[in-house]
Length: 527
Image 1 (cartoon, rainbow, N blue to C red):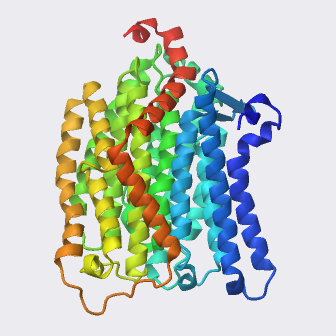
Image 2: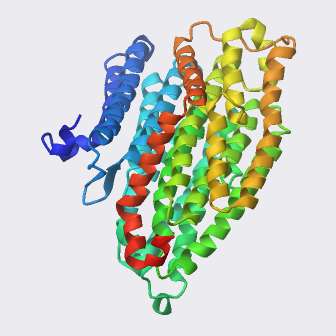
Image 3: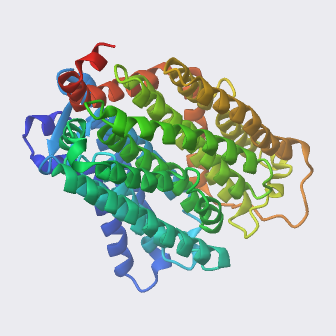
């Protein structure tokens, strides 16, 4: 596993996770082309695709483990410094690939109802996952934009694959239009940043912004920063650019909704973290760039937590409820990023809490959407009443859903409890008392709609005319088992992952951005 560091195999080895994903997609499509009846080879197609995901996951874990075995190795740059391999990137890649695996396993029986071949569907999932993996290790503006578009391309199509539902086409079109709007903002903002700094790689951009002569450029760089932040807020589903989330999540096939809720959000936050550290440097121009940026992010985070939880309280469609829940969780995650940006001398604490929470969120939300697919069989309504009496019909499924809901609510003995605890703690340590208070109140209010799902499963009688549960769904059951176990394990023994997340965030900060702080503003570095 250390071969890629010693240069024995070559630079290409660092792209192995992405290569495995694309290879899995290519093999799946090739298998389908070898027969006139795609349904006969659907099993082989599925195993080819899931094999690519699992190989990518194992490779990522091996790379991540290499950092622990070689303490002096912090990162590696490839592709003209456009890609950086560090612990933080491997942490988020792992979360993304787990989310992709959950999507693939829960899609094993849903494809026939979508009027799309298994190969086409899973190839789109793997192509989108490739963009996500590349996004969290991107180290320059061009690579970030190309990765965002590669990720979005697959998701745009996947959102509209449920041809039996009129909502699916509507959600795909809405996501395409709004996504193009956000991408335009990001691209135009990057153009302004490049025009004023002459730099492409993130460390060079950060260095240039920290030493920007504002008398010459005025507020032009600030406009570029603002446009990029607007585009990123859209990608993570933050207020006021959250309107697309409920409609798209409701209309898309349930496994695709799960992929968007966990993997896409993780990738978007990975890019958000790197760009925030770059675009809000603590240098001579700190007050111009970071001051207004932090104020705006604080407002966005607080309002996102409140609106997401508030509207979720009124929902009876469980996918729509989890969509607003996803919006609220974006607010929590933004709070961790704000805490990191607010404490220049110790940014790693907030980023470590953010990384830990993303992993917990992948298992909790990904597992919940997998169970919805299993129980509702992707019927048009997705009504919460489909879960009535689930505890008596499928007790194991009810237990798994209980674990996921308790984790999302932040109840002790689940990973979600420690995730929220560390986020709120870092916010308080960063003197963000008001934001932390808003987050705690919003979280308490949000616990109601999570607990309501549990009440429906255990205290309501089974209703007539409900959707039949899938008889042969070993893939969904496997995904549910892994997700529930991981959620409980992280609620009982969170120290290992939290330490790894802290180490990953310290490596990210210490590598380049802290060097800029010490070089250009020693006063801040001493605090």
